[in-house]
Length: 389
Image (cartoon, rainbow, N blue to C red; front, top):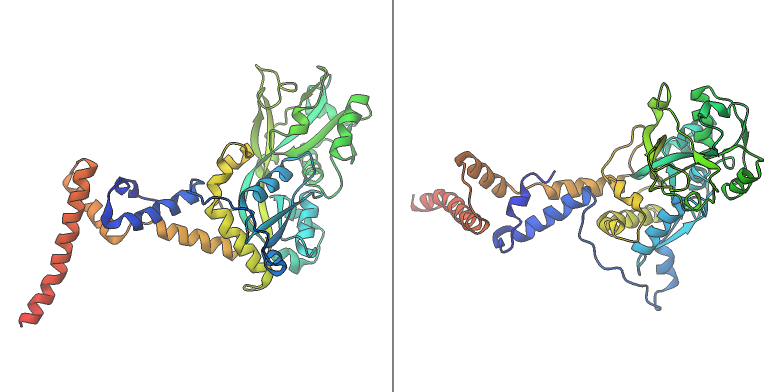
């Protein structure tokens, strides 16, 4: 998108340094590379009305999952005097969408891309469902199936007890869809994830399925005693229409994946979902404030200490079947426009390429100054001739 702007980014390029710096920064934002401003702490004197005006609730997932860590990163990076992010433990993607539509304190939710299909299937207030939008596509979430080592093929789960998390969670929804598409009929249980690990060890269930971005801390810390592993899931048939291929390696889960045998699995995309409030309303403006901060400071999420899944995010990526909220689309459009080189820069580039001129950065800067002066003389010449007439 930035074209050949990088050619003019050398130090000392004064004739257009400011314009090109803005273009380069805007282009970098679209690929997740941007110069960020320093985070500031809220001052004690902030008024209650101002504090509430800039407060947003972000509903995520369970305490052991990736969603809550992503929401915590949003708060840690973006909190300042004008914006406060309140991470909330949620009950999963499907319930998160319902919370976005109906709960006053929930402004944004982290959800799986396939969750809205279930809302539509339930015919849940169609108008509200139609007003759901997304801010940005996030990362892929991998499907984890922990099973006893005696189970070596997912089809062996037929008739076995498999936990798929609570009703309303994204895991519950995705698990049902996957088993249905594969034609496998396990005996499904709906314990919370924390309980499922203990029930695996006791033998009450034979497998536990969990959809979350790797590495999941609770799964990585699961003490297997060599008795459990992660099952592969085939990428075939109808599965390929809705999900993405993914892989677990030993470095992700040393106790569950052999060093010489990666585990093939599936992944589903995730996104930041939001309700499309009327423009200029208080709740819309809160979301707009979040969008401006999140997009412009995105590079801070790529720094050490943040969840590694941020490195998968492409802010400009579209999502089939979803419409981006206008505040986010407007921001991306402005960034795209700013990243385009000016007419003078493009004209100079065309001139240099047509002549096959290769010079040092210092010589290039001097040539560009001469080029601008030549263009200015050409523009002034007709005016001088007109005055003489």
